[in-house]
Length: 72
Length: 384
Image 1 (cartoon, each protein chain N blue to C red):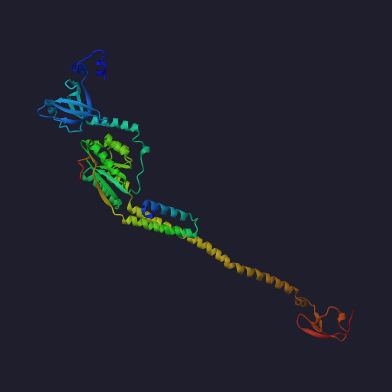
Image 2 (spheres, chains in turn brown, green):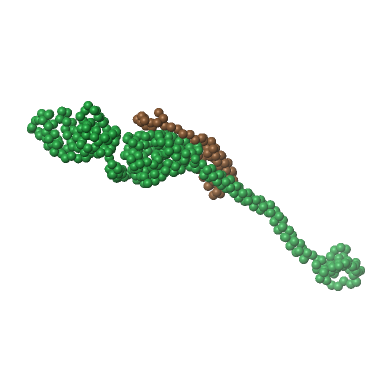
């Protein structure tokens, strides 16, 4: 999966897994550094998603058979 | 029914009108009774003696043509609208000219509260037996919906509560709203259609159906079979926020989650941004902390190794030094000087230590070494 398509939930889940792995401590230094870098990247993406997304309201017409639908 | 069965003789032949008349005689023996249904195809004309309408069974769609004398109908002052649920008193009749069965009405009543309740109870039992309300059908709500669908009436209150509730918790929420008629005649199928519509939106992961408080009649459409079935059949989880706490329209039972108010529903469907940020910050602290611990732990291990590595040569030298001291001591012990201190002397002749007297002759010059100092002597006599 390309990172760009990951949702906030997926990114955060991966971050949680990385933290879990590091907390167990049974990783070599090289791997720990790589995990940490990946974790920082995930954190950054999560924060961007939380900040950048802009809310919007979309209006749909009711059923096609509903001639009384407002907004039509 | 019994009517046809009795008069289908295989030998006797009847004219159509005689047959219809015979049926009519038979039908007149049937008692006056009440029929419940929805009024459709109502036609009333001042020029006609009769008012015509069709009674329809909303569940099965079965129909029954009915007539009522116009004066009688007008006297009731019902102002009936299409789709209204009524109880009609009357009896079966055949319209001989066309051979059509009609229901000759003598009284029409709008369905009362008790009848509605009984009808809802009946429907509830049927749907419960089908398993529409089963706990195992309930789906969990998504934690991070891509979009939240909202079905509301055109009235601002419920819609406003839901939208405000969602935005205050999660400003970035994508909300898809469908407004529809939520009360009155025909509202049920419209609500069902609106729910289907919003649930079909590709980004919608959860739907809130919101309706503010209202009278029992106002909330009736939410106990409509089409609505309840639409809730149960919805491809994404549905949160029901209809009426107040004490109201329990049947749609509540078919919904995945029931919320007491539209605002409560909003809280259920989107995460709280403040909590999300706090959670993310916590995760980052844990990330940094745990990574640092791994590195620190490793460095400590490294330091310990280095210390041991560094101390190794010193230890080696120390051991050597101790061994050397031992050797020196032993060397010391073997030194003749130590022997001299005990009173012995070394006697040399021409620099060579003498071991036997025969190596000298009278008159030889000897050097004698003592523990402290030395002296020379001349041999007076050699003894064997």
